[in-house]
Length: 267
Ligand code: B12
Ligand code: SF4
Ligand code: SF4
Image (cartoon, rainbow, N blue to C red):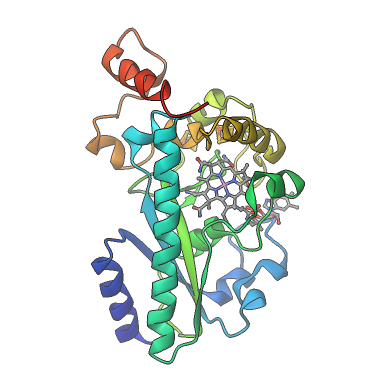
């Protein structure tokens, strides 16, 4: 186990302003924390047989931008974060490979547009499960991985590496408060009240809603991550009171700003 190498990776991530970094040993996929789990062909060592560790990074989705969703503003942020995730994980993989540890990045999504998702809404690797096993958070009723720092408002990217890095401890405290805001506010009724993985997102309804927004240039939706009360980021933006989304009478300035943004840039 190389503690020094891990420190070098962390230093590199800090230089790139990556706030969340976690490490999982690939053995963790064989000893899942809950059932049902994914098929073995989705494990990192099945995709990259040299893999010994997975490094997962997380970049935040700024709450005030997400609050304008559905909008071109959130879409642009989503694209920016996606591009950074791919660039950072690509660079981290090369950083490790250059030091003699064969490594590869995994794209943050991995599908050929919404049509491919409508055909089969599953990718070859799950970053949510990787982030869970790297100790970055745990699952919420909205099927997203919640983190203490940003709740579900974080996107993940992963690096498979042959280096044996010391793994991070799993997040012990359950973060989801089961408030059911995500379930109530979902415009496609794609979520139910059961905990993950008993209650799974209705991928068809969510994807169909996303396809409709995409045809107007204002996907993704993201309401289920916007309304979640978990995350330190809510304090930073003065958003502890979640009634802000339903009470236009009490928050006219905020609603005015979101409506303004939504009027521009889409179809
Ligand atoms: C396909 C996809 C979608 C689809 C399908 C959604 C879904 N819930 O799977 C659509 C378009 C609908 C979608 C929507 C959204 N997505 Co999306 N999506 C993905 C993507 C590309 C692949 C997910 C995947 O297929 N993983 C692989 C399979 C193996 O895992 P799985 O589907 O989770 O589940 C398997 C196992 O867990 C197991 N399993 C689990 N439970 C059960 C139960 C039973 C009975 C059985 C038999 C098996 C089983 O079998 C499943 C199938 O093999 C990932 C990126 C990635 N590559 O990880 C992002 C990702 C999951 N999405 C993300 C986000 C943020 C969203 C949205 C909020 C949109 C947005 N950006 O604003 C919504 C939220 C929807 C929701 N609440 O679930 C983030 C999540 C971040 C986080 N904090 O968790 C990800 C990780 C992207 C990223 N790089 O950060 N998404
Ligand atoms: S992204 Fe939108 S449609 Fe999909 S589950 Fe979340 S709230 Fe529902
Ligand atoms: S909105 Fe509430 S129920 Fe949904 S994931 Fe967040 S804490 Fe859990």
